[in-house]
Image (cartoon, rainbow, N blue to C red; front, side, top):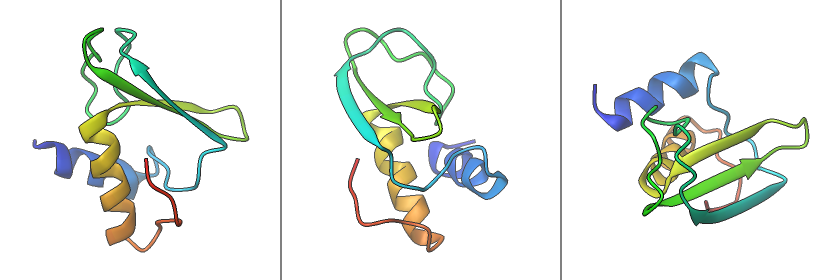
Length: 83
């Protein structure tokens, strides 16, 4: 399954959220799994971390964060923010 379909399915299922994060961070990868594609985020890649008010933290590859933002917009759930 390609990344767009994977992320679209997770948004539709409610596994990934489209609300605005309280804080966002970007740094080199930690080796943890991307919440978008499920693959490890290499230490040589950028990792985007989104922290939400309820304590939830999501981590993404740069490309997966962009795809999520676009998919939320397509589903009419996009707030006015950019990853």
